[in-house]
Image 1 (cartoon, rainbow, N blue to C red):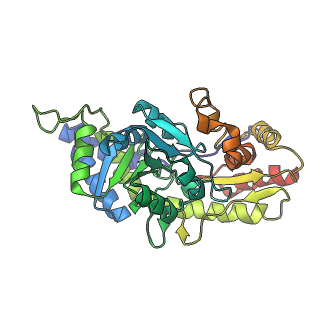
Image 2: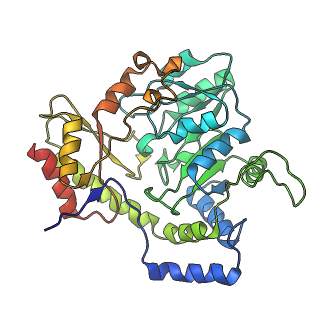
Amino acid sequence: MTRKVLPVTRPDLPPLEEFIPYLEQIWENKWLTNNGPFHVQLEQALGKYFGVDHLALFANGTLALITALQTLRISGEVITTPYSFVATSHSLLWNDMQPVFVDIDPLTMNLDPRRIEAAITPRTTAIMPVHCYGYPCDVDGIQRIADTYGLRVIYDAAHAFGVRYRNESLLRHGDLSILSFHATKVFNTFEGGAIVCPDAKTKQRIDYLKNFGFADEVTVMAPGINGKMNEFQAALGMLQLTRVEHAIAKRRELDRAYREGLAGVRGITLLQPPAATEHNCAYFPVLVESEFPISRDDLYARMRQADILARRYFFPLISDMPMYRGLPSANPSNLPNAQSVSRRILCLPIYPSLDVADLERVIDVIAGI
């Protein structure tokens, strides 16, 4: 009997017959991109869902990050985390900025505000934290530092769709928040992303920049990029939005089942989102401690042999990659918590279509060791 392969995440796609009417509408409209009807509808619907007034859709989250930095005219040095997907810091290099890596909090895996201040120099213009696994950053601590030193704050909120913190959307913090709608995210449009911004003027600049800088048919305001979301992506987003609450509820059930099944396993630490957080359960990360009978990498290999595609999110650190490790801030001695977490982290499969029997198979592999 062939075993089912269990990835960490997988797209939560609707039945094809539910998507066909949207495709027929696109064909009838004969409007495939450039702010078509579904694009307009999705921007408005997501703004209402998040409780924000201004949101701009993008073809993917990386283009949204690159454009966010252009929007705020960031330059020089940007303080960020080494513990993230490479798009976070790549967006800085694409804008000719220097990432300055600061260590993370070992409990939340997010940028540690206590270490940010020491990294500020006359060239520092912004802070780019990541809400890792959808766990909220210390938004108050980061904002206090930004206000004191006159810095901008751009949140990489790729994991934070639907996360609420202290009874409001987590996306309302910072100058801008950037979302990813990649196929493996809680909410997906195949590829896609968005920038949440504070006012109409900022959104207007973002809209110029994501469309080559065009303000009208003959006026180019800035050296923009082609970052627009097309109608196929936006239509899928409209359909997915009708299902996302159910998907998040299912993820929370799976999260509880993992916690119950792994609670007594010595050497496995279960991470917790900060208090006052309505979490989306985008990932299920655990730490494999020295008390566990085998190493994290050996457990990872065992799971692969069992067709469980657990992932070491995030390993290696961004700061250990060739294009970054020469930076002074990338020195491992500067990042002890990030180094430690990166060597112990393992993300287990979690997605709405994961059934209980498969989840129990994951638990059995870990507990059996």
